[in-house]
Length: 182
Image (cartoon, rainbow, N blue to C red):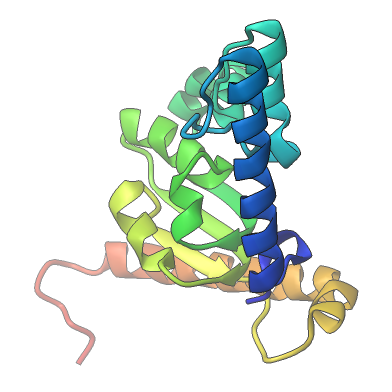
């Protein structure tokens, strides 16, 4: 997996430092402490600025999308939920769409399959948050440029693997109890 949004670890450290400095300035000049504001650092600190200057209230984007789409009603009618993201990893637990969709699916006892460009560190944690199975689109070692160039083909292969897995599940479900195939 490659760094999300193209930032190297050194760039992430610099971005974090810059956001801390920005929060220090907002506290000094406006008397508003936003250092630990959930979502305040998103979009380069735009969330923190909206809270500081306009008194806005931040909500996770996935909550807004779930509400706007009426996702609860749609999920209630579905047999299976398939969701996706560029990368699934431990950061996916912090407001990313697949986990938000999985939470809706859990309310309706629906199984969830997630498809991602790649599975990063901590992706297995998502199993404890409503994602039942995960598939990576990139199925061989390659550069980010190669992965993007082959995206359509890679997605087709991943979709075929998901479909084949579902088909295996259907075959297994039809076996009589106690039959192990031997």
